[in-house]
Image (cartoon, rainbow, N blue to C red; front, side, top):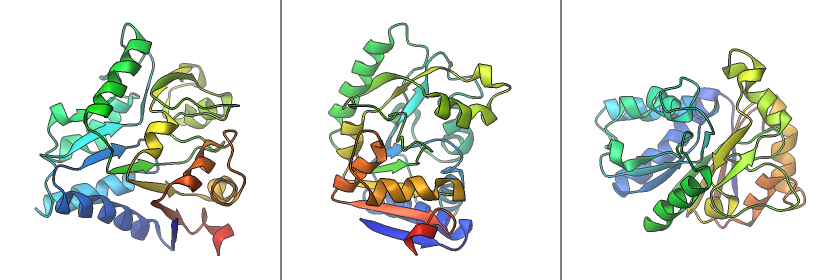
Length: 242
């Protein structure tokens, strides 16, 4: 486990983007696992900046997103498919046929989960998986539970998670109740995991996840078992690691 704390958001974003772009520069056909939410936006901006300097190309890279809300079409501004286009894909040369996100409007969500797992399996290991961290310790949308599902699955979002995401919607009632998420088993199969955590409100949970008991009640704690985990923290999130 390699934990790095940065004094400024700009330095953290530059470091995170540098890890991802460095991989793609050395391995153009890399398989990337991508995340959404507010945390990666600055990293994606840095990736776009580097791309515009002609320092990297994503034409041969393949991406898999962690999750998608059930019930939201790709054109919905709150869908993660829309988010990825807005914050990254529309600004780089990624091939649309190589960017994969679960379908939130699949007629059979369980069949969609199986399809996504089979597609992931066909590419082998993810080279680098980018992760954020939920206030309750969730990664992807793998919520705390007595047990966790290894593969892609439909999950009922906790009230805490829905409350945290309500700021992106017109009203709390509009936050979807379910999502399709990549399972913890798939996440842990990635060759490298890049965990990015920002904000004072995440300081306690990231410290618990990385130093506390390994338990499915805190899904992120399972990252302690990974052989190549890189953690990027801003000054506030990393205050317990000083």
